Image (cartoon, one colour):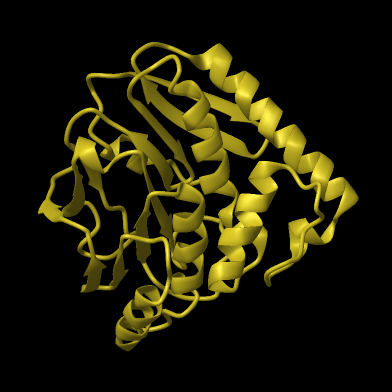
Length: 241
């Protein structure tokens, strides 16, 4: 397994860091205190909800296209399906962002600031400015730039899709597609959809145009090799990690 060194690329040394791992779910969390027990309970809760729904509707796990869901589907399933429908991907494209957001939001009752990272997808609630470093694999831009996020912008989802890094399914070859949205679920699905379009540097403009048409996202950064495209309400800064 590739070491997740990028997990330390979100500024949060003033917070307490801890991890929660349950089977495939591997969260890195920062909060005002060590909330490992509460976070683990929430991970188990939402994993069980998703597993139960998949048992009843196996296509939810495997579909690469938007999927109709049952009227009695739980909220996390509904939000994943809705985000996926908006951008034309399968609902599981939003699972990492969904778990990060649902766990993070419930932990807010115990900590005024929460950073939940789940495989490159982040739910962030902060009271002050944070810098989120951008990991883009072998791109020369990797680790050199970051997103500056003010506390007033949060809660916020910051999700990354890559065709060259990690094990997540992507039909593209982007080194990194980072989407910022009030919803980590929407950001995750959108990052996957945009990333699928990026095969070569010339496709960056195509990805930007597609992003412009997605309702519910604030902005996007697309990196392929040494090339970068930016759209929307994103503030880049230099960083060193």
